Length: 233
Image 1 (cartoon, rainbow, N blue to C red):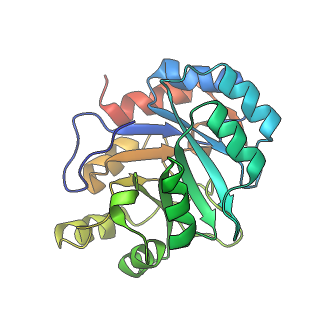
Image 2: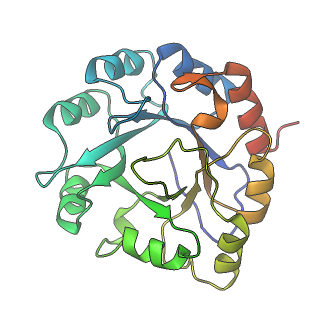
């Protein structure tokens, strides 16, 4: 996976299908043209065990993009998760929990590419961004996920961010110096093209917006989402 610039719209927006819980959904995501899938080791209805994740990863070619959603404790990454990711050359970590400069630096030293998450509170975009990367070296970060803030829920909420406010912040130069933006929160096959036109993110991230039920992806919705995001008629 490669990253690009925050300031403009890339030729093809990077697309991640998050909350994959079944091998057949991983295959469908890549067949639809997604650039990456997300495996959730954090919590909620889309959380996978190490055993389930291993089954999914065994069916994914190593050149395919995989992002692991992980909770960092004061000692860093859970040993069993680290072992699995190392076995399958998964290097991208979407981080929750103790996202401290020390932990992130240690992950970088181990070859990981960290992806912090900014849970945007209404009317507090810039403050939320600053808080999410406080003390971190932007050069160490693959990208930053902007998601809607929700109490006791980390992603998959179906709630959108204020796209217009994000666009205004970009136009004022307030996103300069941050890693490439991956837009998440409430995206669907019906609204992702509009979100991209307004926000001009480097990438987009969807979970609940392409599901038939929590953790089970609708394969037609996957295809429709990727085509809409990448501008394929």
